[in-house]
Amino acid sequence: MFQKVKDFLKNKYFRFAVTATIFILWVIWIGNYWLLLGLPIIFDHYITQKVNWTFWKKRGQKKSVLIEWVDAIIFAVVAATLIRMFFIEAYTIPTSSMEKSLLVGDYLFVSKVAYGPKLPNTPISFPFVHHTLPFTKYTKSFIEWPRWPYKRLKGFGSIKRNDVVVFNFPEGDTVCLQDQNSSYYTLARIYGRDYIRQNFDVIYRPVDKRENYIKRCVAIPGDTIQVIHGVLYVNGKEQEKIGKRQYNYTIKTNGSTINPLRLQEMGIAKSDVNYNPQESVYTMPLTEEMVERFKSFSNIVEITRNENLDTMVMWKLIFPHDPRFAWNEDNFGPLWIPKKGTTVKLTTANLPIYRRIIDVYENNDLKVENDTIFINGKPADSYTFKMDYYFMMGDNRHNSADSRFWGFVPEDHVVGKASFIWLSIDKERSFPSNIRFNRIFKAIK
Image (cartoon, rainbow, N blue to C red):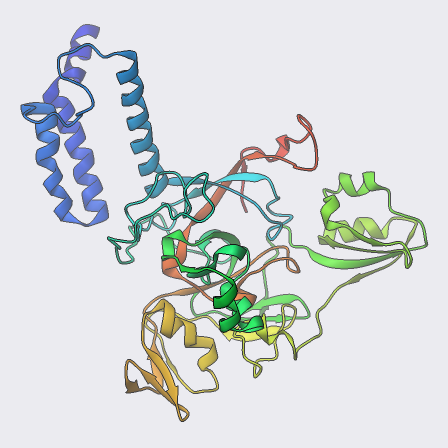
C-alpha cells in the first residue's frame, strides 16, 4: 500500500497537476495572465520532456555530488527569493528610533502578506541584497531596465493606526554616495545643491531599492495629527498608549553618580547616557516606567522631560521645510494626512505641504509662476490625490528621523508589517549574556 502511494506521488501527471495548479493560483493572485504562457514549459518539463530545462545536468545520468549541490543551491535561491518577495522577509534593527518597543540588535520577520506584497519595481537584481552588491561600496545590485509600475497584490488587511510598519525611505530617491546616512534633501537645504553636486556623487534609486525604515504608523489617510509639548494627538485625542515610548530627560543628582548596574537593569544602553560631572546632570532617553523608578532613587534631585522650544530655525529640518510653518519635533501641526480620491484646494500658502506628493510621488510637472500654480502645464487651484498616505513616528520620540522631518509615506513605499522578533542580540555584552532570550519569538505590538 505504501509503495503504491509512493509511486502515485512520483507519477509525472500527478506532479504536473500539482505544479500547474499552484502556478495558476499564483498567476491569478498576481493578476498578470501573460504569465500563463509558462504552462507549456511546466507541461514539457514534467510530461513531454522535449527541452532540457535543467541544462546544467544531463538526463538519464546518475547525479554527481556536485550536481546535487547545484540542484540544492538553485532550488534554495529560487524558493527563498519567492518567499522573500511575496510572503515574509527578515530585517534587523540598526538604530534606536523605536526603543524601547524595538531594540538595537532585534532581528525580526516582516509580513509581506499583511498588507499585500508589492511587485518589485526593478525585477532584475542580485538575490538577497538590497541596493548594493556585496563586497562593493557603491556598485548597484540591480538593473534599472525593465522597470515595472507600482502594483500591490491582495493581502490580509490594510494598515491600521499604531501598526509597526517597514517602508522604503520616502526621501531616499536621491542619495549622496559618500554620506548615505543623511538625506540628500536635508544636506541640500543646509549647504545648497551646488555644494552637494560638487562634493558628492549623487545617484537616483527606484522605490523598491531605497533604504528600509521601520516606524509606527500613528495616522492613516484622512486623519489629522498634532504634537503639543511632545504629546501626539490624532483627530483631537491623545494617541493610544501602545508600545514603549520614550523621551529624553535631564536628571540632576545631589552630586553623586547613578550606579551603572541600575541603568543596566533598566535596559538603558551605555551609548544613550550623557553625564556632565561638573553639574551632576545626566541626559538620557526614558520611558514613563523608568521615570517613576528614578524618582525613587535617593540621590535624584530633579527629573525634567526635554522639549525643543525653537520654532524659528528648525524649518530646514522639519517638514514641510518652509519658514512659514514654525514647527519642531515637540510642537508640530496640525496636519491633515492625504487620502486617495480626496480633493484639496491649492494655494501658494499650503503648497509646501503637498509639493512633494504632486511633483515626486505622483509624477506631475509642478511649477509656480507669479503666484500661479501650474500642474502639467495647466493652472491649478485644486488637486485630487492618486494614492493614500501615512504618518510614521518612532517610539523614541527625541531620537527618531521620521515623518516629522520628511513628511508623508506614500502607499507604494510600504513594504510590510513587523510581525515578531526571532532573535535579539545586545551588542554591549559578550556571548552568551548578549542574547536577550526574553525577546525571542516575541510578537511586535
